[in-house]
Amino acid sequence: MKKTGGFTLLEMLFTLCIFVLLCGAVFGLITTVLTTTASLQTNQNRADQISALNAFLTKHLSSLPAGAVLVSYRRGDGDGLNNTGIIVGAGKNLLAIDAKLQANSYYTLRVVRFGSSDKDIQILSSQVNPLVAFQNEVQSSSESLNWTPLIHDVVHVDWKFQAANTTKWDDQWFLTQQKPNLVEISIQISGDLQPSVMDFWVPNLTSLPIFIATPSTP
Image (cartoon, rainbow, N blue to C red; front, side, top):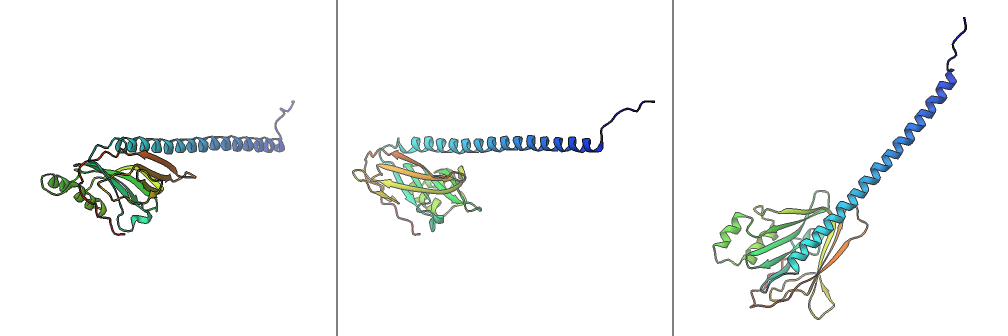
């Protein structure tokens, strides 16, 4: 009776080695593709966040009416920043854009509008100046404020201000009778190699003086 031929042990081991190598190559290729895709998606998300922030600031800084104010402030020591944020708007239409320190030592860029708390509603029916009251709330980190996150995991954010007819940039701005001619924000999100710098022109329409904002004490 003729015996049926089969694979030797050496042939099986050789085939198994080739199969393992092919599986490793395919796995490595898939991992590389997934990592690259995730990296591209993350980069796109950061670019989208910066683009959205640019549109948001353009809307609120480039169309300020006469009588509007723009002042910067620091909360405590500024959480390591020259400015914690800015308050911008006119009358009761005020909003604050703020950088809040996260637990991981990064920052969250966030925004809040005046009138978002019960305390604001009481102020609206009183004779208290809205800017003074709102500035006290944001600088004291009032828990009644309803902040909306804009960008998480910000490495650093810096505001600068330039008055008309000058080339000097100031780190802080406290004048309420006069708005800066240009506002610059430099923001770096975790994963970016360098910060994104955006400049905004501010219409300096004048009106009757309102008051002098009190600079916060670091």
